[in-house]
Image 1 (cartoon, rainbow, N blue to C red):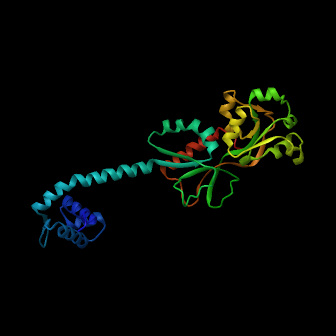
Image 2: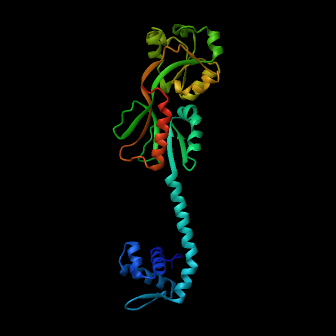
Image 3: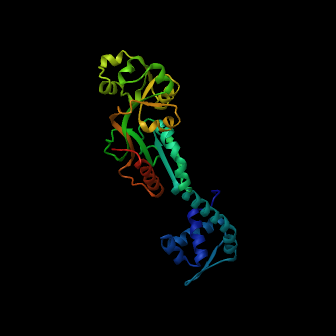
Length: 299
C-alpha cells in the first residue's frame, strides 16, 4: 500500500466535510457528485473505515470521519499556505539576463533604486554575452547587444551603440594624445566584442586599414577587462559612453576627443519573446528600466 492516501480523495473529503455536502463539494471541485462519492470511497478503502453515513437524501460524517478531519485539517492548511507562499514568490520574481559589462558598469549602479522602490520584487540577475534562448533558459526578459533584428522577439532600444575613446589621465599626458592621429603611437585596447577601431580611426584620423594594422594593439575578449586595462594605463579603449560614466566621474578615465564619437549599427535592446507578454512584476521591471534609460540619448 502506498505511504500516502489518494490526494484527490483528500481534496474531496476536505471539501465534503467543510461544506457538509457531496453536491456542494462537487460544485467547488468542478466534478460530479458521483465522482466525489467515488473519491470518498477510495479514501475509506485505504483507511479501512467509514467516513460518512449515506442515506437517500444526505450524507453525514461519522465520528471517525470527524476525528480524521480534525487531525488532517492543520496539515492540509499547511500545504495550502506553503503553496501560496511559493506561488507568491514566483509571481513576484523577475529573471533578467544582460551582458556582463552592461550589468557591472551600468545596471549595478541603478539596481538599488529598483529594489528600494519595489521591495517585494524578487530580482534574479544573470550576466552572459551569449544569446539567450527563451524557449530553453528560465529567463523572463533580457538586455541584448545586437542590431535589433530578430523576428521572434519584441525589441525596444535602450541605448544606441556608440564608440568613444578613453584612457587614464596619466596615459594621455605621458603619450601626448592631443588629436586622433596621435593614437598611432599609442597602444589600442581592442575589445573584440566591439571592434570598431578601424572605423573610428578611418573616420576621425584619416587612417586606412593598412595604417591601423601597424599600430600596437592588445586584443581583449571582455569589455569590462578592456576598460579596466585602460584605467590602469595600459592603452586606449573604445567603449560605449554609458559603460564609462562612473569611471569618468571618479577621474579614473578621460574622454579623448569628445567631439569624435562613432555611431555603430548595434545597441543595447530590451527583449522578450513576442509570444510571451511581460506579466505583472516583469512588466513593472521593464517599464522601470525603460524609464531609467529615458534619461539617456537613444537617438
